[in-house]
Amino acid sequence: MQKQIFIFGLVMLMAGCALGSSTKYIRIYFPDGDSINAELAITMEQRIRGLMFRDKLNSDQGMLFVFEEENIQSFWMKNCLISLDIIWLDKDKRIVHIETAVPPCFEKDCPSYGPTIPALYVLELKSGSVKERKLKLYDKIDFILTRNKIKKFSSGVF
Image (cartoon, rainbow, N blue to C red; front, side):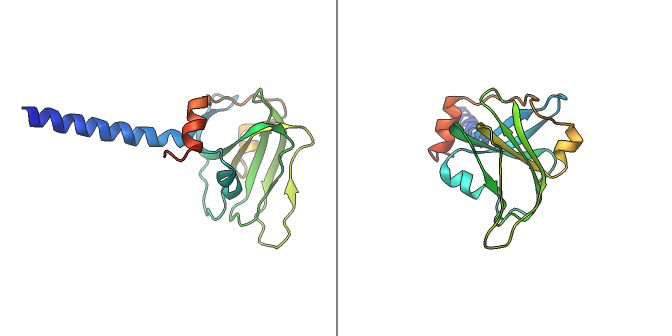
């Protein structure tokens, strides 16, 4: 009986660890009530890599870039293999800029995309998502991002 309890406890511990590792993703909620899972890009290394070299992004996926402070954030598509919609959000999670169908870039010098308004977050989605979801400037995108989640993901605990 003690062996069974020990094994059950071990299985529960392993399940908890597996669930904890999924915290590198965050649920993003759109104004229409729909939601997606977005991978977090919090550290400089994660933000630089972004979605480079990925050959697919499903319509229920995205990447949320989190910055330390609101600032002018510019993005490029160097080594991206797929076209993306890119959405810049201010500290209140309101859309301040949108770029749609941003093409991949395989050249040495790639163009940069970005707003003239400071942003704290940038959300990358599958190309066509902005049109499909009818997103527009000043729409609010919702998500819950705790300091603990930021600390945990940026420290490499995953």
